[in-house]
Length: 470
Image (cartoon, rainbow, N blue to C red):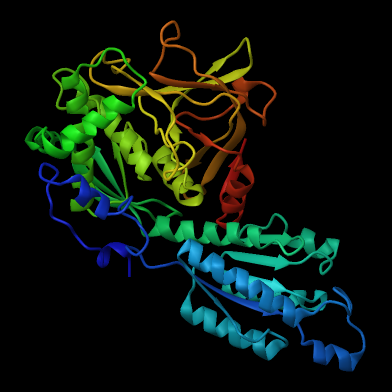
């Protein structure tokens, strides 16, 4: 059953919704408890120490390795991972020792159809059992073998195999958590819905590979709700917060800020009515003359700060990327237009909206200035100031039957003043680690966020057969 089949629908209108009621909804429509949890089935694979004692030969990991004690230790960590990620990790109580046990596990998993597998190996000679399970069940599989169990040929066999994430390291349960988080995120994406706001309604579709649903509604509906939404009460409170928290206000008037705050409540109402988890909008068509609504950039900022992906210009790939980044790392991200400082070999990205909670939705915001929309010349948008020296990741998921993801990393150098710099209001210049010439960076509307998470993104891509592009 998909999440939305049993989601609670709230009928409160944006005009009358209090901030307390907004808070009670949780940080986002897809908050824990409103979707079925991801389910992973798992097993430890090894012969009992007692049976090895009878044989008198242990092979790797050797006679000093207490598999039963290690299993108990690992289970304590796995239960914490399960609780932290809000998912179910159903581990077999007894280790899989022989073909009969492996067959029974395979049959159970084929019937249950979990979202993924977790296989923990404590004996080199049982590697073939692990390979058989993965081959016959064909689900994304995380394999953990503590250091000193596998040899090089085993590692090379699956190190780059799509659908498998092999962790061959000393008791690395943090890496297991990363793998479980990837499986949880993929399940969340399958259960999620993007509300696409464009000129005309269109039939509902699903994203290939990820399965995310796209429900398209008319921009006229957004404009109608916008016109009906009153500017008192919670709208006024949000506008006051925008004004209070800004380090400077340049072009926008108080009325501009008030109208900008309304867009947040319109988005929230539409997300609730359509049971959506993210939104994307053909925003530029709505603000051209004659305008149907003000620039929605402040509303987008607040949504992203809450953990709700909000895609500019109804662009699907960055919207999907923002959703993935938010679920994997709890980091809002910055969809931007790509450019380069060719003389200093720096990437330059800019757009007229950006989240402020760049360190995470539950952490303090970065400073921002209130400006008008750079290209339209009116309204209220944020200029968010990125912190020089912070490591960043830049990614763009590309949806198709054979999906790919562009992945880059770098460091923030500066946010040039506007003017003299042209372009959009929020901008950032960054180094790029993966290419010598920054002009070789691929893509447009890529998403930039704080922290170097290239390894975790590559793990996600390997588990779900997504080609990595640099």
